[in-house]
Length: 336
Ligand code: NAD
Image (cartoon, rainbow, N blue to C red; front, side, top):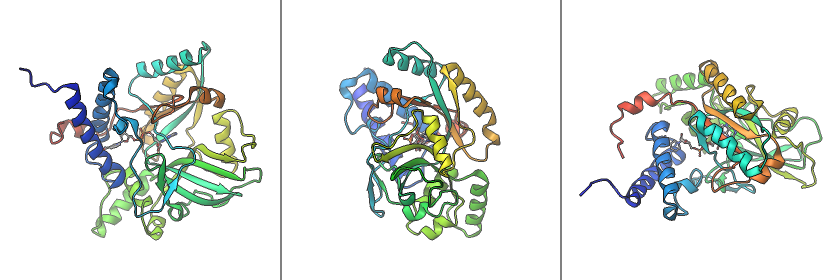
């Protein structure tokens, strides 16, 4: 008799393992394994569920975003869910992504994409009312996040008041909080000197710094923010530009910081060129990125394409080869 597991039993093992890794990553801010190893297991689970759709359950990690918020923080319910992104790991899957979009839109013309570095930090929602920052929250499980208003108010490049005047009464800005590499190195040196916790990478340092109960600690950490989308905008009659890229520029006019590498391009061939350009520049950038994100630029097409369970259909993250891969190969402890 063969020892190989049935799809059912393998799926159970994968879900348990991924849930355990998610807890360490999202709740404790202390990953147990390198991302590349996590991604391999997650993709194996996705492939098994695709081949056996009857085995998909609502509580599978493939159907969920992040993790529930910590009870130490008060909770914020997201009026528009904060989703994750689908991933492409090679050229073929990016080309297939564009083809899927065109088939679904029944349109043969090439699509324009907004191209953005995939910053390796954590997603944050910042709400402005009458131009004033009134609330900030983590993504949490996508539906409910943690209220981290006081902490976000300490981030130097997050405006407490919007510039200009024609902003909507309520404006939710979404983006990534991250720790630039130089600040991360300095922070770890200081932590070592003080015999305090040393962070595994800038992403963990950013997450650990932002999810502090004492905002005076966050204020001392070198965090930064780049905006990459909008959430709630009210009143509903407020007229926003019809392109995602133009909306980003509007955010910049209102004083919100944007990543300088943001660009737009046409078709999957343009996306592949952008991917290569950013991959080549990766080591010279002052912050960590783990890939690039492509988003259909036309908002009406985004709305037509809609969402699947945990990610929009109109965007994809093309991941870079993992820098941690070498450690992974030597990592024999976690064979699932
Ligand atoms: P994700 O990181 O693959 O993609 C979604 C996130 O990308 C968003 O929430 C946002 O924070 C970020 N992002 C950065 N730049 C963006 C931009 N320009 N536009 C939009 N979003 C942008 O998804 P996820 O659900 O946050 O996490 C999954 C990933 O986290 C995995 O692929 C894995 O690499 C890592 N992870 C690792 C472990 C581990 O144990 N090592 C555990 C869980 C997750």
